[in-house]
Image 1: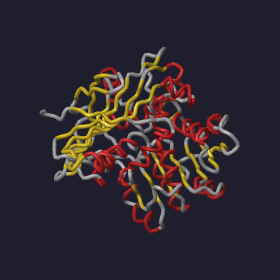
Image 2: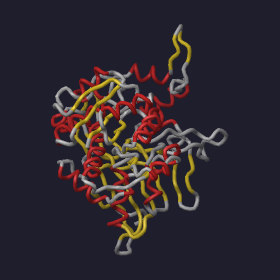
Image 3: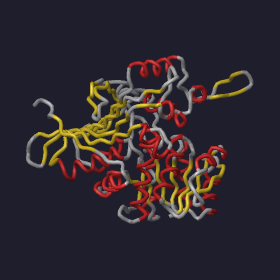
Image 4: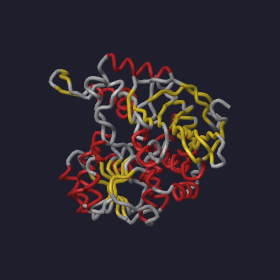
Length: 405
């Protein structure tokens, strides 16, 4: 398999480093708008890895690079603004495609906090017939959240439950970044997008609906010593993906942001600094959100200053195979010290990066196969989870007391 990896930020760099350690693929071309950054990403990866400069928004240039490098798959590791040009370029080029974040949503113009407008992934699913007719696979939302969280939902449906009341993705951490007043551990551009857009919820019979940002706060007790963290509703792809392939009554996503982080996001929104529409500053036109991102430290470079754990997981409630109420939390924890020591990548970006590589390994071996626009829960979960464990990144399943018992 020959892979074009677009994006050499934190996640892209972690993908390149991990792929070289796992000895995956015949070749990987790492492309970024900043060629120097791409070169840094492959510096110690070996001869199978090359770096090039590329504008991810230029469909023609992407298609030309795919052809020139004889790539079989395009792996998208840039922010979701570039999903559709890369998605279309892969389709036009006749290669498979994989991403970790789906096409952007647009809030309902009149009723944003109750009714969805354009939902995450709508633009991609609109082209599903073309992918299927060409016999090509677009595996969407294949990071950690979405991605591994969706695999957990599939596993629970297949092995642990006879019926599911709720699939609730819950993300929390106790990570600390030394030396900064405010330093997000993941792309602030993407974080603003998902946290300030109206969160989306799925309910059987009602379908998808939205709520105000940061709604339905709850205290969730995370494993591995992380402990209780307040989590709130956030817009996320799992809610759009899980109900398509897993029979369940409700799907939610809640993020453990913390009061300070929520306060900063609200302040950015009040000041209009979350906007992506360019404004005039002297003789320049610049997006306020891009300015915010430029003022904050690059998450990829924070690993040496970080300590603690990050946890991604899926809470599933329903009726177990024995007919009794059951509640489990399937989870994946990464210690920043361990990911830095092994791969030189901080915990949050490495936890995201490991999952698309596992998926590509399964696709290359034809353990996972299909055509169309498919989410992770469209495939059997067992081979994926076994592969993670074999690569020394195990997952856990914690039994919890069912609600009301």
